[in-house]
Picture 1: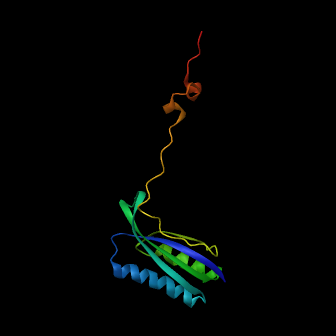
Picture 2: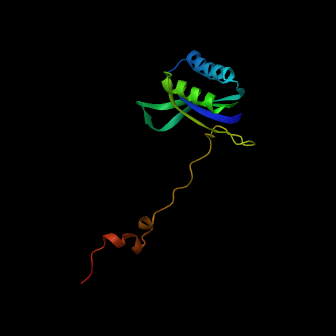
Picture 3: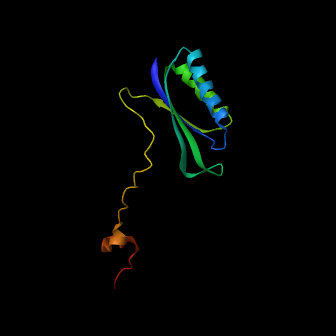
Length: 132
């Protein structure tokens, strides 16, 4: 058995009951396939970097489990056809790692100025006209 984690992004307009059904179905598939459910970490509603299907937010859930490759393939197949699942990503779980929801109180990293903004002459080499 291999340890995996799946990050699910669900439609933000789904009712809580439907979200719970999707998570329960995933757990049922894992256990029916002989796998072991380790954890479920609801990350909650997050803003997307770009809109998907005209939606600017998604509801994230992280699932960690052990299963065979065949069970993972079946879960992936079911998630692809399940209404309400916007995206999902399955990866091998690295033992000892702790995947956590990104903190929202951390400011974005400072933006670096480009050479052009700093006024370096070499930044415009390709666009300068040749002198006579």
